[in-house]
Amino acid sequence: MIWFISLLIAAVTGKEASGVESVLRGMAYRLLFRSGRLRIGRGVQFVGAGNIRLGADVTFYGNTYLNAAGIKGYIEIGECTHIDQFCVLYGQGGLRIGSRCAIASGLIVYSQSNQYEANPEMNIIDQSVVYSPVSIGDDVWIGGGAIILPGVAIGNHAVIAAGAVVRRDVGDWAVVAGIPARVIADRRDRKADHESSRP
Image (cartoon, rainbow, N blue to C red; front, side):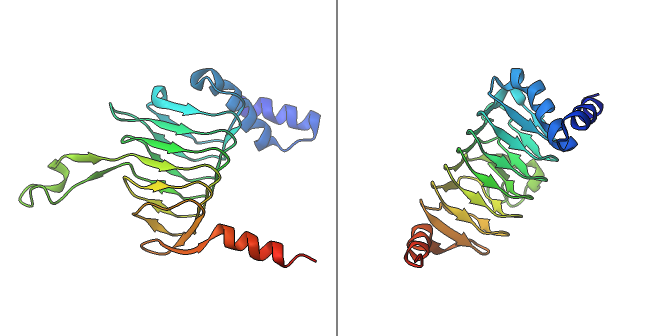
């Protein structure tokens, strides 16, 4: 039904139909999340929706899975953050994403993990799950296909390169890349280089 209505609105206004559809879908979710304006594309799944808080103007481009189920589960996403397609956000151990973040497609965030060391004689699937919250600061850019492991804190203004596997904390302004992710630059240095090259 939303799809059909968005086609009609797009035909009348000249706007792109999938964009209209994501705004309409966001309007339907505003009451659930008690949020300002949202844009939610097709195929976004919310598990444990009562434990999810979204700021105003959050955008999900589609096909993203959010799981905040369980007694330790929560997902909080700050205002004006954009999350591209095919992201998986596991918040059973807690997940905070700041404001004005740009998250590319294919990000996976884990805030919980099976363990194998507690009892090597026991099957992994039978061992307890370890929960450890993940925190992502404001104004963070995360490249496509990055993986963030449990317990990681990413500082404000950081950049995580595409394909990076982040298993340790990342400081403010740091640019990290690789497997495992390592600091390769400071974002402020790039700004200084850019400003010095202006006429």
